[in-house]
Length: 336
Image (cartoon, rainbow, N blue to C red; front, side):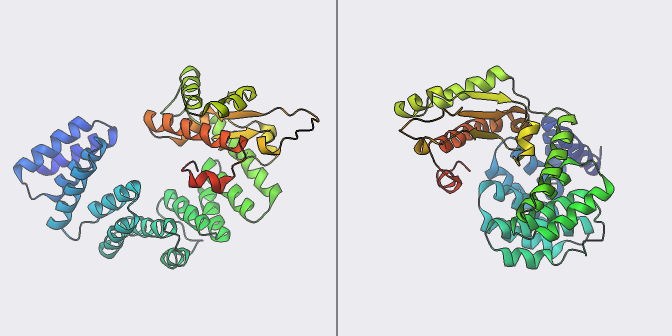
């Protein structure tokens, strides 16, 4: 095989999840020419798959040095740094990628990456300025994923109108795409349009229920084991107070809950009266319970380890509501 053929096969193997074959192809290509930037990118992606971020960054930086106009390593480096929480450095790579992007897909990828980082840095003006470089919202972008990404960023900077326009463009091409209906529900929620919100949330619930099963399933026995282990982390006093609060596992919020305005993709829910608000004078009893939504948790996570950690976080989050903590309190504890 020529180096080009090796690399084409290597990237194809990587997309299929055959990381060993991709690594082998990258090693062979690099052995033939150590100055091949594409080989460094492929091996950087393999290092990421092997959770070796330091090696991945070295590979991406080497590819950039060899070819400063190569967009891919800049984008991969930015995405890796976002995952690591190093947003300022990620922004630098995204800006560099935008500067050299020539193909439309590369330009849009870099533009949306940059705007998303700016939104995460809580700089809505900068994000809005970056997003202003997008084509008009009535122009179809080359992939629906670009519209979805743009809409999510517009929502993050509280521009529900622009977000809605992008979600509407998605539905023109795919009227049954649950993500777009969900996004429109969030737009309606941001504007206080409850009836519209519930309508889109109900459609989201219906479409999600009909979708293919998650690639990261978890059986109920394992989920219950994680719940029990998590509850054992709590202080004894907290465990006693939660003794009469059952943790129930359901696939997703019921139709009734969604009709009441519950997010159809919420991971968990505390239903009842928070402990600090309970009357010491008696009164009508309340059925307190914590609900875990199995399918939503599975769809939210990309790996078994991530799923297990998300179940733990969700349990602590919802039991926190039982003890009277609000969303701001929970965010300060890292449970948002």
